[in-house]
Length: 366
Ligand code: SF4
Image (cartoon, rainbow, N blue to C red; front, side, top):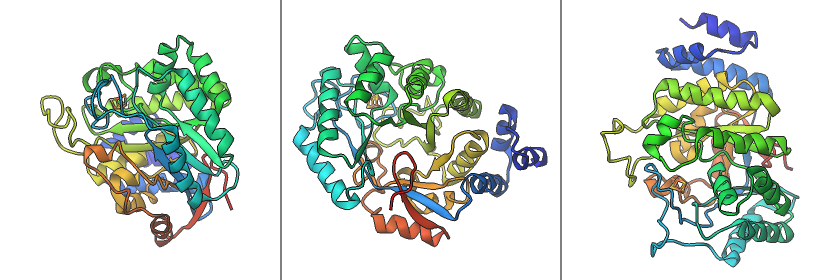
């Protein structure tokens, strides 16, 4: 029975940690979905689902952190390591702008890479300012907290000075990547060289204090317990209570293929999370994270059909067109080629909503 939790939801009362734990045990996922859809409709009353024209660009795959859940990185010195030349990055942006048009800041680049010991703050300042100069229509949504922490470290800067300099060079907002599960015990098992929870949270906290917007993510379905998933959500809710700088929440499950962790059943049960786990997790997150406005479908990991169903489980946004994806696809999952703009619009409309274009700040774009 979850009547008492439903009562809280209808009365706009916050649900507790224990409530979220109970929802993870509740056998009827559809009931949780109905509650999450109720909240989604209260926050987004129009029958609209938004999407964004954007492109992923992985500027380098060189990374010394070697997370056990990652199949994308190449160690420093590897023959397969790369740093994209700026001209190639510009070509990729040209392709996106051809699709997205010229409205200022209406096209998003999500530029992320590994922790490359050769790239200091000056590289990023030069690149971001060159993009800003050439492409006024592009919003630079770039770098994970993990990358920013490392750039600050090797450039001998405080986190705040580093974020300020990146922002002044052209960085518009920061994606939520690198959160995985916000638990140091989990990080010790799946990526012990990665930043600590407090460091990840600090990047977002500082960015919010500087007036920047960021997003929040969760990668679940590996070694974490349900309690650790809820603790993750609690960290996000607490930071959001401070300045409200998170625009959106995106969750996806661990993609195990070709990763060190994937084949190591001494550390996890080897069972990739199912679509039901995704729907349950995203719906409970919608109920728990009452202060984060947008929830984005992860079609790149869940596929078009589960992403479409998630629109009834608290999700109000279909995310970006992406155009290319190299991180999740390195771990054996790729839905990117099949997801054209027209397909995305059709999936939204077939679920009963108007497909409406937005920018990274969630303002609607004509
Ligand atoms: S997840 Fe990021 S930090 Fe970890 S190895 Fe992959 S690229 Fe490096």
